[in-house]
Length: 225
Image: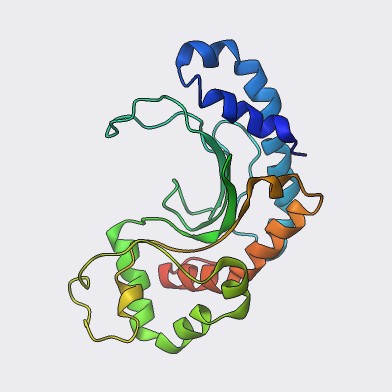
């Protein structure tokens, strides 16, 4: 469903990242990026449902699983209006934004990234995850050492605090994880990987590999998986 025209659009956009150029090439964007990405989301829907029926795969270009191309410029020195990548999130049904637990796919000129987790959730949710790690350290250790997660994604990652979060033991064996502000397991491949015939199969397999992490996050939030 993806072909080189998908990445070519972003290669040219990188040299013409302005509204005038984009408005002149909007139909090209819809044909080469939006349509194949929507097809990919549709293809993933039944596969995702086999992993968990509590995550949405909505192929609509607006209001669905696909992220907008427009950048948020409010707090950025870079005023380029458009992102140089395409992405989609198969978000948990209770989630309302990108900070909800979900499965994620990111496609850029440099690489394609896919996996599962939760990105910078609100403090209340973050502390629930931390509390669950404290209360269930052995299960967290099993997830961290899970062979599939390590083999495909290199382990569990996420930016963290410099100091331990308030109220948590600095000597806890999982203190580096308790410092995290995000929890995710992502597979990184070269961008041409998205053109492989088995790309959808590999995304599905990687989503399945992250299932222990996703179940743990959902359990901590008291939401179904």
